[in-house]
Amino acid sequence: MQRVYLDNAATTAIRPEVVDEMANVMKNVFGNPSSTHVFGREAKALIELARKNISQRLNVSPAEIYFTSCGTESNNTIIRSCVNDLDVSRIITSNLEHKCVYEAIKDVESRGKVEVIRLNIFENGEIDYNQLEELLKDHSQKTLVSLMHANNEIGNITDVKRISKLCQENNTLFHTDTVQTVGHYDLDFQDLGMDFASCSAHKIHGPKGAGFLYAKKSSHIKPLISGGGQERGMRSGTENVYGIVGLSKAFDLAIDELDQHIQHIKQIKQYTINQLQEAIPGVGFNGLSGDLDKSLYALLSIRLPFHDALIGFELELAGIAVSQGSACSSGAAKTSGVISTICSSEEIERITPLRVSFSHETTKEEIDILIGTLKKITEKNLLQKA
Ligand code: PLP
Image (cartoon, rainbow, N blue to C red; front, side, top):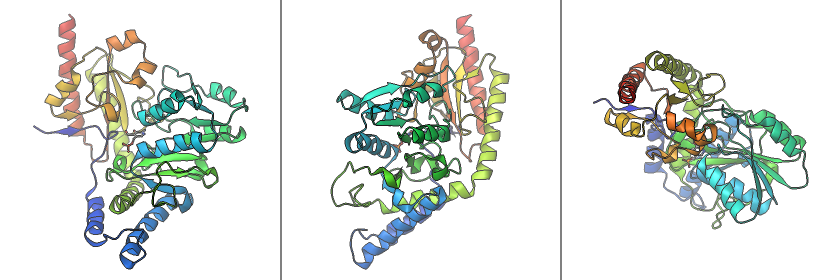
């Protein structure tokens, strides 16, 4: 049976070019980057080269990039440090954030450290920008806005430039989780204007266990992890040298081949939408994910017009890997927080949400396998209902 991988928002296959680059470092550069001898200096040079490369591509200063282990660590560091070190006492966020942001904010809230305001969300998954604008007029508390760039479940894209401008006008800090957009778009962080952002290598065909956080030079956040003072004091612990090299290589490949990839993946997404609409009457799409211009081009959040709690297993039996919730909770049958936020409980009883996410390697043949299987599952469900 052919296996079909359509869960690229959860993680991507590491590219062979990345593996080669990492293997070369593993074999030949084993020094501790903190050592002052030549072995250490060689390793340190690789890290600094990666930092320079990434920062140039994002149009920021190398001093604004800190390597971490993943998106989760980056987002946690930013949020917790804003509260602990920058006197933030109010956070404006939404219920659509990835768990690592949502839970970090819930944690600081439960410790009584901050007041948290969660923005109204419209049925299409858009945040209420007018409410945000009104809230920002209150300057009585030091505020952090934390709103993700692209949603990992429904693909909605937030207008980061608009929020940055609002935040700057109101002397407010702005963090945006860019884990689903770095390497998927040619981003200019300076132009986007946020204070903090995050990245995870395994979402862009790089290795697991490597990522970075971006913090504007003027932000002065402090480390969560203390120790040997690596990453200019921001993130102690001996650096994951080959992970960082792999991240930089994956980022290079992603941006150098971006136009071809976007063109291919958009075609695949449009094909999936068309085929689904033809095969399954009443099929819909969650959030803005059916709109190619307003959503992440690599992700489609499908809304099947019946409730099938076993769909994950049925697709699994057919060799198809998709997600029913967010990346971290795939496999869990529980309805995701994002879907619960944009759908009423009666609606949730009547539908089945499915997230499919593509890569430059996804083929139309794979989509045909998905559609054929979903068609059979739909027919079975409609028969059971009749
Ligand atoms: N933020 C978003 C939007 C994500 O999609 C993910 C992963 O699913 C993360 C953060 C967490 O990244 P990591 O898996 O590197 O911890």
